[in-house]
Image (cartoon, rainbow, N blue to C red; front, side, top):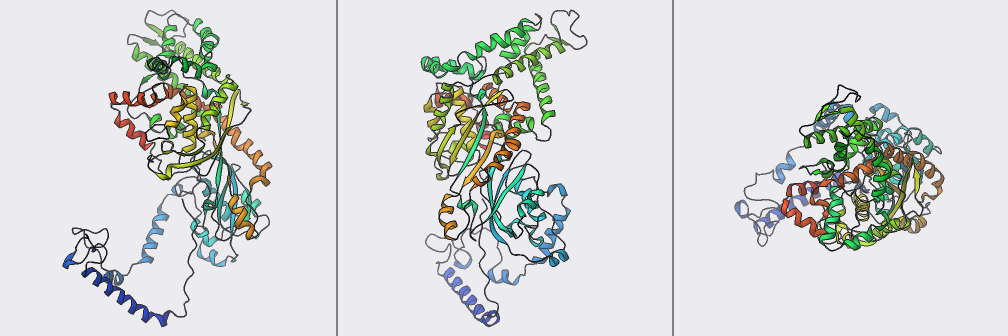
Length: 632
């Protein structure tokens, strides 16, 4: 993370000439002492066990005898670096870049405009903001992609809060963000600290007038000069919205559904497994009777067996090497497939059509003698082994829609909701979350995080005929994808009737592959600055940083720009249904730890299948992820 840094003050210029001779002398003495240390074997690399260079001199740290010779100190000093030429060359390269590759920062203003601009004082401030992350590549400014900070910085310049002289580089304003959210993640409250020109009383209104409705500045508050919102933040609140049908068990005919039953019997855990699924045991039988049977009964005898095969057999296919959804934990590839913010509706239509075509293609592979007829309308009798293609497509589409409608009609029971809360409670306190992020090992102390609370709102809400739960987590800090993996693990253990010990085992010295839940439902509620407010702000008579004064504005913004956007995108794209259905039907030992066999079930089958390549891909997680990514 970038952090604010105070620049050391420049030394007085008046004594430069007078002291130059002394400096030259002391520099010469230091060089001679360095050479003497090298000859005596006491310089860097020349101590006990150190390497030896030419003439017996000690090698400097990081050097070796076969390394190409670098310039010496004297040669380096005499070889003048052409900084002006280097800067001009870099500026020329920047100008040659296409404008679409540098959309984030405004172009540097002409020198005459910069000189003519009135010099106004800058003040260290905290800017309290909210935003909908849809369509943005995350919070932190990026020269090649659209980001929240990029739009904010442009608005600061346009409103006169940043001078023209500093308009081409955020570092000149000491910009620091409190929480660096991931691509597509929303924030009702976040903070950036920097130096701004805030003399105008209407500066907030001016900035907001240069922003889209997706980004709002709630307020700007003066802080102490050394304030860094990243360092001063005590903790953060996040909210995650998830449909309650995410906690339904896998379909009994799915790969994971069958394995849950198989391992429950193998481990003599059938009775306890049934108890953990007692409140949803009736769901799938009722769906078959109420939603599916009427559709199947209405089908022609030539189509009915094929459609049943499509429902119960073709979904679970052998896991291909490098499955894109699994490799990326069903995040970036899935988002590109379903939730491109600019083409959500079109993508939803294409997705439904592609799923039907994929199902028919699989039926054809499993039934080589099948002939699809696309010339007739279904009213003309066809010879044995020939089926009307359009009639088959409509039947498959109707059944898939029926399953989704049945899930949306589900309403979670108090007992099921209590199981979800019990799973979330296991995250409380200090735990090792190495399995809940990327590129972390059990031994990494940085993977140890403290969770203060993780609670479910008592009353679910119903939007667009779908019931949702609001999960709120309060922690000191979070690693990349940590919250989404925490939600994903809790949902998977509840829906699979997994023994509670399995979630606790994920904190131990073992590798557990945890998919991250869709980013659609995640939003940063607010950061907390209690320590700063109680000490530094009070001591220096600064206003405390608190979002409560903006509650009415924030709630209206959340409802319009965040909640409704989440509900609308899920209604069009069914991201959560696609996420869990794909996991249920993924024929690979990766998720068998969710069964009664626990981690050993995953290990045993993996040893047989030797899927080392797949596990390496899981470690990579996705092409654009790294350990320094955003929170959540």
